[in-house]
Length: 123
Image (tube, rainbow, N blue to C red; front, side):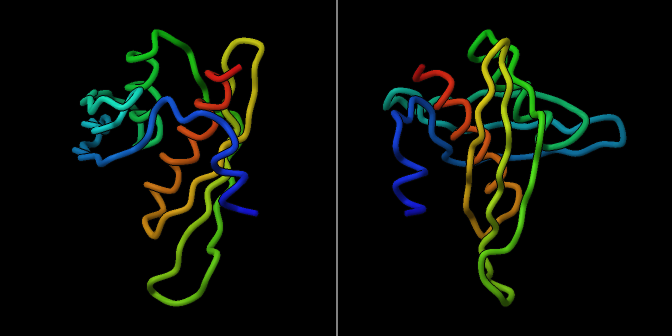
């Protein structure tokens, strides 16, 4: 069930890796993504890692995506537990929930954001 929900639409953009630099003022992110089968690198900055991630994607897509709701929880127990992130993404008149799962809570959030954005882009 989980697998089907996460992959029931085209994935125009997928996550590969990221690097974060944090200061008191802002976080800077360097992202490696795959867009339409091609590896790309983008950068952004924001008041935290999620804001920096969204800002980098907004620059890439010339868009104005925003996080409007966010939930996260563990889906297993122990130190190697995976996290599930549920993030509502808004863009103009469209809103969609994305889901991401990863052992790293930040990466789970990034995957959820991309899941929601890919759903909006596939409309």
